[in-house]
Image 1 (tube, rainbow, N blue to C red):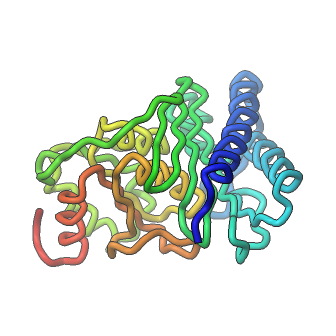
Image 2 (image 1 turned 180 degrees about the vertical axis):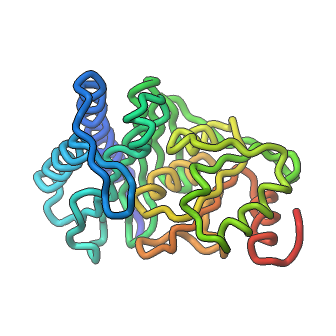
Image 3 (image 1 turned 90 degrees about the horizontal axis):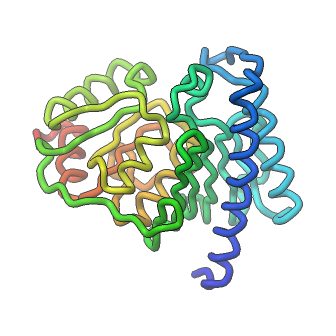
Length: 265
């Protein structure tokens, strides 16, 4: 089954409407200094996280009541639906609290359980990436593409935070890191936007959730890149939390060999 061009444009337009609302609420919150809480997993959450997600969920339920929703802060509904919106109201809550401008909102639409459409909304820097998997990626409304990089030892790589990894995951990650030219840490969702724009070559993370990854995955795929788990499988709503995204299939293949324990790049 395929979606008509009209339907795809409708969904992308609505996703941008969601991002517009998220941008306003995030920009307002920076001056308010919202109350900070610590969740059971020891990550931060603010009142702004909850307010943004609630507003986006209300918009989705009014426009597409038959769609499912998976959100970081307010749970899930109807995950077996054909279309499921996957929401992270503030990706990079710690940078948001510290006013380090790499935080943003992630708005994704899963179709038949896979990343289909995504928005990375970065209000602090006035950047927005949007994309449809295997079709198109836009940076501030201008088409963007990943860049070629045939050798892993020439790759500029990023990782959000290796502290999220288990000991075994970290050892595998370190094996990949040691084969790259450089590893940059702490970019949150901005790092995935940079990959889609051809400014970096590889992003590798673990310990994440679908709402951290579905929007970047759709955008990077739309920009010509490749995104999978550490076994080379497509991302799914029940994913393990491991992800590797590459602009060039050559370095994706090389990194997967290392992650599977079958050699260097």
